[in-house]
Length: 258
Image: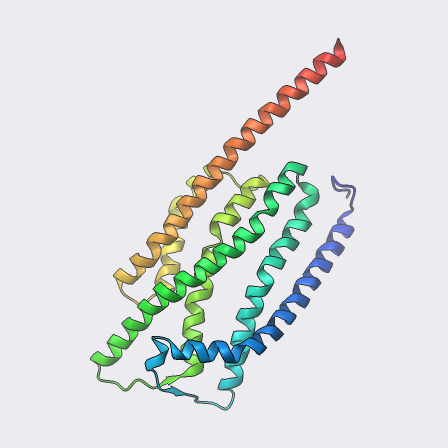
C-alpha cells in the first residue's frame, strides 16, 4: 500500500520503530539524570512545607531505592516529553502541508510549558489542599502522624502526573484540529461526556469532599472549554484557507482553458 509521500506501509512502520527506540533511549538517559538529581530534589522537598513538619520514616529496606526510582522516572518523563512531542511531529510531518509543518512545530515548546504549569498547579494547589485535608482528618481522630517517605512522594506524584497530563489537553486538541482529525463540532457534541470524565478524574486525585473536587474540576473544565475555543479558531482558519485554495484552483483552471 503506497502512502501519499511515496513511502510504503512497511517503511512507515520502520520509521515509527526507529523513533520509538530513540524516545526510549532519551527516557533512559533522562532517568539517569533523574537519579543524579534525586537526592538534592528530595532534600529540598523535605525542607519546605508541608514536608518540613513531618518526621520521616522508611518501612522497608527497599523504600529508599523505590524513592530514587520514582524520582528518576518522573524526571525522565519530564526530560523526554519535548523530545517525544518532536518525534510525533516529525512522524506526522510528511502528511502535513508546508505551512502546517511550520505552524505545528511551535506546539512542542508550548506543550512542555503546559506540562510544567500542570505540575505547578498540582503541587502548589491540589497537593497542598489534599495534604491539609488528610492531616486534619488525622488530627481529628487523634492519630500520630508517622509518614513513610515512599508513601508521601507516591501520594504526591499520583496527584501531579495526572494533572500535568490533563494540562496538555489544549495543545493536543489544537494539534489534532490542525491535522484535521478533530473539529469543534465534535468537541461540543461530546462535551457532557468530557465534563463527566474530568469530574471523575478530579474526584480520584483529590480528597473525598465536594469542595476539593469542585476546586480542581472547574479549572479542568475551563481547560476543555479553552480547547474548544482554540479548535474553533483553528477550524475557521482552515475553512478560509480551503476556500482560498479552491478559488485559486478555479482561476488556474479557467486560465488554462483560455
